[in-house]
Amino acid sequence: MTVTRDDVLSALSRVPMPGTTGSVVDADIVRAVAVDGDRVRFILEVDPAIGARLEPTRAEAEAAVAALPGVAGVSVLLTAHGPAAKAAPPPDLKLGRHPTPQAGPEPVPGVRTIIAVASGKGGVGKSTLAANLAVALARAGKRTGLLDADIYGPSQPRMMGVSERPKSPDGKTIIPLHAHGVTLMSIGLMLKEGEAVVWRGPMLMGALQQMMGQVAWGELDTLIVDLPPGTGDVQLTLSQRYPLTGAVVVSTPQDVALLDVRKALDMFDKLKVPVLGMVENMSAYICPNCGHEAHIFGHGGARAEAEKIGIPFLGEIPLDLKVRVAGDSGAPVTVTHPDSPEARAFAGIARRLIDGGIV
Ligand SMILES: Nc1ncnc2c1ncn2[C@@H]1O[C@H](COP(=O)(O)OP(=O)(O)OP(=O)(O)O)[C@@H](O)[C@H]1O
Image (cartoon, protein in one colour):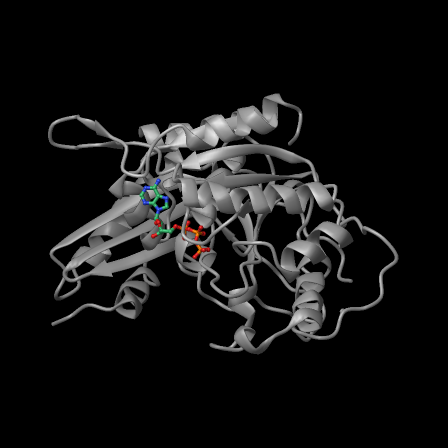
């Protein structure tokens, strides 16, 4: 018999949440449920103040799922998230409307800084960086939001392990989701499949405006925005309509990726958005068997490029299977392997932004 995600949630809906009259599912602490054949993995995300006391609940949840027919192994991770952000007062919802006129950059209520994560081309790890950076900042005590504005390929729901459509009780305010200590919203969660692909400039701008202004972000030290790759309408709208603190640009070391990065840097320069720094992703690969370090996409290209144009180099992230597997399973590597070299590299980038007084 094959076990499903619904079977797992149904078993967990019988595990009581201490201090409440409901279950761990009612308490909304179950994250990143992944079923891989007869193996099940999920995360219980709890308030750090009560984290240690919930070990018996973790064990109970593990036993409840292990007892399901067709389950041979269960792995449950108990993680603590940072303080929850306070909800902002409701401001107006129907996604994909035409943008309302706006004189100049408009602050997002409650949001102190906005950092865009950008790349010259697709597939270089922009969403991976955005997710891990958001989690690393939250773990460093910063109230952090993550907006997935990659309208043509939203990947944050998968990477952060959320799939439910955010609620809008009054049809105006959108209530964001929470995962791994981060307040989260993705345009992908609000759309029917294939809807965004027919959108053009004005509709895109309207949707982005709603994501920024109608989501009850709460009080945030920083909002990380995962942009679509390249230099298009979303980048333009975001830079012109919102007071961006700056952009972090990610690239692989390959020349072709770096060529595209120059276009992105040039765009931010024209839009007068400060580039906070560059990150080199998929920098080196350490063979898990022999420890040999290989540079599959080359090495050092992004650092050299950053030095050449005089922008900070924020760090390099190794190429490692854990990063991909974690991203696909709904819990970034910063959560699943916090002590790994990859998680430490993401934490280092977060630290540089904090120490640099940016966040
Ligand atoms: N350092 C890494 N090690 C291993 N795999 C990685 C690493 N960084 C990213 N990946 C994987 O590479 C793929 C592309 O990454 P990601 O989706 O973050 O890129 P992107 O630039 O946001 O792409 P898109 O253009 O689709 O938005 C994903 O499967 C991701 O898990």
